[in-house]
Length: 607
Image (cartoon, rainbow, N blue to C red; front, side):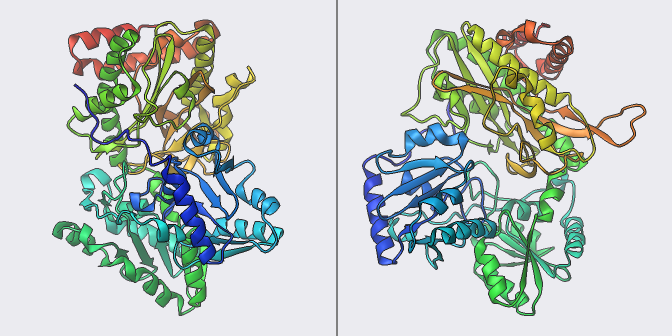
């Protein structure tokens, strides 16, 4: 009945292949007179999702998470992952060959400073690291008496004989009816920012920013409609877009050429060097520009200006057309979610559905809207102990039945042309334990605290992150991920620069969309997460002495009342939930058949 078109469940290459790959790589290190090499989970533009041709870390180690760094050396091998991926790395990486260390606390440079030996030569590909990262790693190597060595070609590529070809996804035009703003107006804003930076040109290294600026979308990576491309925007004159011409139809090329010169990607380094040769200051996005670009500008006689990408903030603040589109997208998504949650409640208690069944069912309900372009990330469908793996991705090997007495955590999203969605629900299958109800209620209270937050203009995500954790903290509990991330408009489901986390230093501005997703994870037992998307909007407060903001909830799907311990809830929290569920009914009921409508009425009854 159900099937997935945008997701696969195959296990990554592992097992017998991995020792041979590591051995071949070590032979290549010896040939290059290196004692080790840094292999990040990255492409040349620091994308979250990378094409198969850039999955060097997964090819060498078996680890498929979205963040990680490997350091294979001649006699040892170390893998660095953050707290989201500790359990996943333990399952995917050969523990007899690799030792797993922290990617964040402490960071890899701490490990390098204390574990490298004097005389070690550690190589790196300058196209796969930012300059800031290299400066930290270089200092750590120097402290140990080791040397960090840039290489002209990546040694992984030398031994990866079956490496896929780079992608050639077709570019599409993102109509102004969806984008809300034309390229000319966007370029004018960018040039205004260039003036503030006192820069002669800006290298647009983030492909999301290229897509946003020129109102195009692409198909080069999974789940995000990205065209892998660069752009160069001068303070005066015509910008240049660097993109493989094979990705462009006549209409897409015509669209781009109205506002930019279009050339092949190979021209990028020559064009940058030509501007740098005059001693010009050239702005680079510190988060996505490769160290190779900094080195290029410097060697050509220019001045690299590394800092925050001015386009990131422009893109994050959605205009009225984008806001209207995302509301429409979420209303459409809400219908699919209601049908799915009803199906789970009907089928799961029998013990006959699996995690993969749930993924396929949800994607099918979304496809039935007729508007689904892709899922916005691989659906996380974790039952029982798998729910405790924060970024779990079910494969045929890990797939398990959803059993009565367990929790099923479903984190999913959709890419529609008018908006990107991301939602998590935790579902009780059968009767939950008292502990499950306690933990779920603490997470829910934190979720409501964010949703109801009122805050002065200029407040950062770090300042409100603890709102989501306070009730877990009271019980000596916490979760090891941020509370929320930015979300794009038919772009990345994880968009900067704003986020709700301990590290979220960007002020939250009206028009930004952020997730609200506190959680709790008990290793080996279950996971809990509740996620809605929120829009920053004005808060009308009588007598307010400065502009004040609040959140408008965009996501509408029932929150499992069976998991709520009402005695732990404050009256105003119960009121919020009842009003939220009333909005779910109002928005969704008319699009459902009678059995599903009756189910929705029952699960959204007042507490």
